[in-house]
Length: 386
Ligand SMILES: [Zn+2]
Image (cartoon, rainbow, N blue to C red; front, side, top):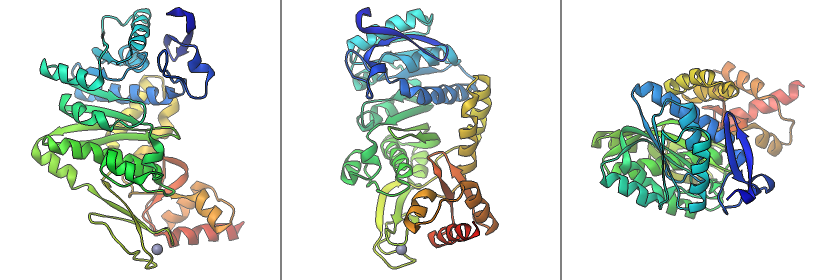
């Protein structure tokens, strides 16, 4: 096993990883998959799970159903109060490496390994009455095939986290594939990453509703290569109904850049009369739980992961914001003007009594309830001032 492996360190965790994971732009699946660039996703998940663990104030179980060489699970075992970590993967090489890493990190007493198909692993545990407090779904591509079993195998009030790497689908390059995988059309717009996140939430809400469950979005983030969402599962038909009330459409006008959200799709832009593009059905409720993020900020400090505090503060700020955001750099390109600072744009919007904040989904964008013509007007005025 050690022939094509090298030592690697992520935070406090020392690992044996496949050599090619570091050498190649896109880490190979063989002998086992490991992406060093996933550190941000793993850091944030440690913060989320530890926060959840503290709030629940009881010993929790965690299950990584597609664990690869086990890095996330090992970090959860080492860095959080979660008492039992289940690591499963269908690739026997990955499990062999995971086993070595678990031993060498001294967390063997907390970890249970298995080599199985992810959905079969969940079904088997369910049959044995073993439900999990937290289930993580981090596949190659779409998480869609795992949502139902994950939702069925989560404990009451448990958590599910999912990663999606089929970003072109979620970002509107293949809207009909999005319809197939997530039951809603994606939109190719300047805020496509938010649409993708909303499709992930709605896919979870639709799947949960079938089993008389609902979802409570806690936290989400996105980078170029993946999107990740965290939800708490709510039990009961009422919770399912409440979730579905957050399902609707985002109506985007390609002509004037205006956007609205509604429970039924719109056909015509209310500002300029042009035909609008509709994304959805998708989640139009809130993306973050501000109270939960507040607790995450405290945990980030406790876990010495303070570099995420700024990001979390932005998430807290935008938690009450409306759907969609304006990419200031893209709009300025279209208007052929220089891009002003994001803070200046936010200041101007607030002065005109609109909601305005940054968003963690795009560092060059502003979340606001102002119509597109007001945003354009502010950008043009700021350019004149220079
Ligand atoms: Zn329009």
